Amino acid sequence: MKFKKDLFWNYVSLMIMAIAGLLMNTLIGYFYDSSVLGIFNETYAWYMILSQITVWGIHMSVLKLVPEQESEIEKGNILISALFIVLIISVLIIVIVEGLLLLFENVAWKNSLQIAVTGLLFFSLNKILLNYQNSLSEMTSYAIFQMIRYFMLILSITIFSLKKIQYNMLALTFPITEGLIFLILFIYTHKQGSLKGKICNSCMKELFVFGTKILPSNMVVEMNTKVDVVCLGLLVNDTAQIGVYSFAILFSEGFYQLYITLRKIIDPQIAEWNVQNRLEEFLQLVQKIGKKYFLMGTVAVYVLILLVYIFVVKIMLSDEYRAGVFYLAIVCFAMGINGKSIILGNILAQTGYPLQESKLNIITVLCNIIFNIIFITLWGTIGAAVASAISYFVYGTKLKRFVRDGLGIIL
Image (cartoon, rainbow, N blue to C red; front, top):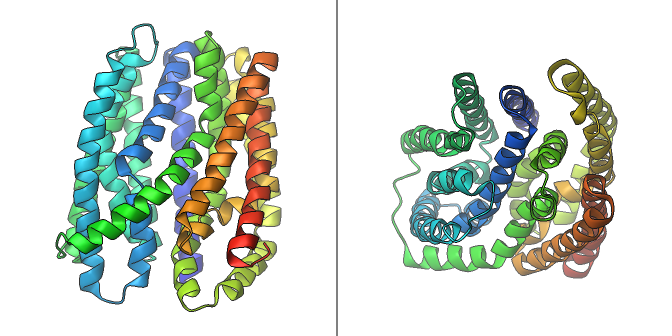
C-alpha cells in the first residue's frame, strides 16, 4: 500500500516537473527567442553538472548508509555530518568556478552561469536533505518538496518573462528557488527531529570516502543527459539551433524521470534487502511488478510525449521547432528499450560497489562524448540525438555485465 502511495505522489511530482519544464522553456521561447532559450539551457546543463561536484557524492552516501542504521542517533549523526561536509566543499567549489569563469571572454552563457552558480550552495544542501528523506523511504514528503521546487521555478520564470528582464538575469531563478526550498526543508527536517545529531569524525570519514568513490559515477550520469547540449554549445555557433534541440530534449528528460522515479523508490530497499542477503529475491519482485504495470504505460507515455510536443510547437512556437520531434523520438526510444537498466542504475553503489558504478558510468559518458563529437560534426543536431541514443544501449549492456560479474546476478 505504501509503495502505491509513494509511486502515486512521485508520479504526480513528475507530471508537475514536466509541466513546469515545458512552461519555462515555452515562456522563454515565446517572450524572448530560441537564442536566449539556448543560452538558458546551456547554463542549466552546466549548473547541473557542477552541482555534482559541489555535493561530492555525499548525498549518495546518505542514501546508502542511513538505511543500514537502526539507531535514530546514528542516522542523525550521518545527516549532520553530511551537511557539514557539503557546506565546506560547496563554498570552495563555487569560489573556484566563479574565478575560472572570469577567464572566459567570448562565451554567450558566461554571465548567466556566473549568476546561476551562486545557487549551488543551497542546491547541494537540499540534495542532502532530500536524499535523507529518500533514505527513510519517506517518498511522499520527498515528492511534495520536489513539487514545491517546480512551482517556484515556474513562478520565477513567469514573473521574469512577463517583466522581460535582461536574458542573463533569468538565471536568478536557480538561487532564488533553492534558497527558499532550503528554508522550508530545514524547518521540516528540524520538526521531524532529524537534526538532533552531531558532527561525527567517523561518519564524516565514511561519508567522504564513499562519496569520493561514487562522485565520478554521479558526474558522468549527470553529464550523460547533458553531453549533447554541452557538445552542441562547444561545436555549434548557432545558439538558435541549440535552443530548438534543448527544447525538444527537455521532453525526453520527462520521459527519463519515469524510470528515475522508480529508481529512487527502490534504492533504499536494495540496500536493506542486500544486507539481508535477499537481493535476488527483491529484484525478481521488482521485475514482476514492472512487467505487470510498466510496459504498456511506457509505450503510452512515449506516444503521448511526441503528440504533446507537436501540439505545443503548433500552438505556441514557430516552425523552426518542428524538427525537434525527430530528436525526441530517437532519444526516448533508446530510453524505453533500456528502461530496466535505468531503474536499476544505482544497484552497484547500493550493494557496496561504488567504484564499479563509477567505472560503468565513465565508460558510458566517454562513449557519449566521442559519439557526439563525431556525429555532430557529420550531421549537426540530429547527430547529437543519435549519439545520445547509442549511449543508453552502451549503458544497458555494460550494467548487465557489471552486475553479473560483481553480484553474480543476471538482469
